[in-house]
Length: 393
Image (tube, rainbow, N blue to C red):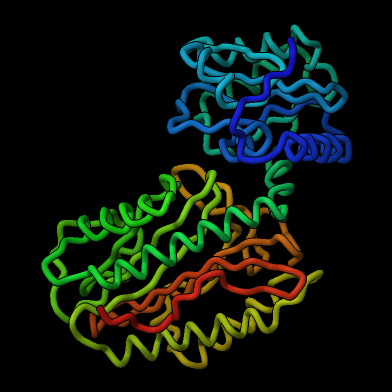
């Protein structure tokens, strides 16, 4: 089959081909002959494939052989006309509910790709565990030596190319513009749901795509406890501090931003905490060094924060790898504390968010701020122009 290259891919074909070469080299280095990629982010990175829904009981992905140039897309039979519009591929294997795992196993066997070491992504968000179990048992049954293929592609995605960085910078500009307009339009009487819809609309007006996580809005006396709750019907009152956490998105590349707004009032303690977070961010960026683990800079940033804010008032300080993402979240596999599944030194193209989520239980407020950081030859720096202090509406 002739290679199919869809029109309108986010990057030139040459960039995707460089990714393929790097992946096959990484497979050889780890002794892997065949890899089944099922992580939506990894599938997008390699082929451009983007969908709004990845059926949990279908192993949608790509089969790749280290010694072969082919990319084989595995997808639902109802997507037969969708695949050529979305994904670089040389062949297609269509699967259906109830028989999908066996169909993938037979596709691997038919190509002879079960010979040698076969890797699957055990920790990918899709498909569900039962399908992964059936894939594993089926591959073993045809003689494959099965190993973990987790983070093989993820590690390639840690350091963004100049073209990827440009998308994240553009997404950050969208987020800044939306948050600046939100500051002008946030009023008492709105519900958290309405504010979430408003920031989402403001982002969309600037060209931002649907994010991997809905816009979070936390307000009122339990905001710090509601940090991962859906926006509610709670009506925002005068004097409330409202934390809004959202992302600009360009071609699935995210730039995360969170700021705290005070509605028709002021709160000295919240401002003090937010300025402490700003000082912590400045310390992180000052101490960060390319070619070194970010853990030392992160530890210095945390010390700075704890000198200014009591530990009992710190919900979390830290950051995680950022960029290409799909629902249900935008959380990557690397951390500024360098204690994630795989370690990663700072280097140009490294992207992370940085969070200081602070609160006062007795006073009943949350003072949270999040920035997206980009490492360049000049060091680590936030992309947002919006200050971290309390933003009066």
